[in-house]
Image (cartoon, rainbow, N blue to C red; front, side, top):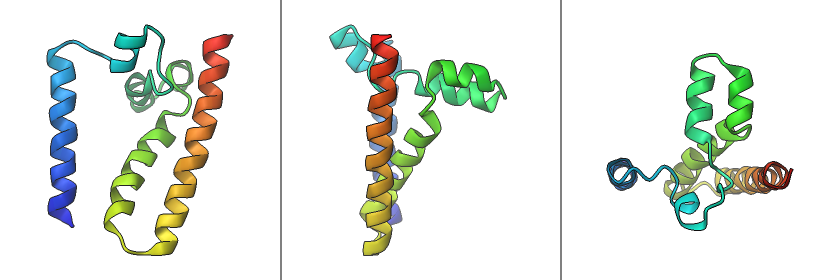
Length: 109
């Protein structure tokens, strides 16, 4: 279980390193020329870590929930508990729906 998680983290890290080396901040924004629903998440997390709550909401008000979603998605794949998976996937689905609503409001206003 741990080795599979480490492998996934390694793949994610390699992709992240490739984006950094190629100076691509967001592949969707790079290709489509509009910000993706998760754009600003990294800046928002760093703003939150610095204690700048106002800037966090400017960058991406759903950032903490999106990070939690990523962690839950990795964990839920490796746990055979049906209730945990159901709760995790429900939380992820709700977060994704709300994030798309926030994105639509931000992009069209």
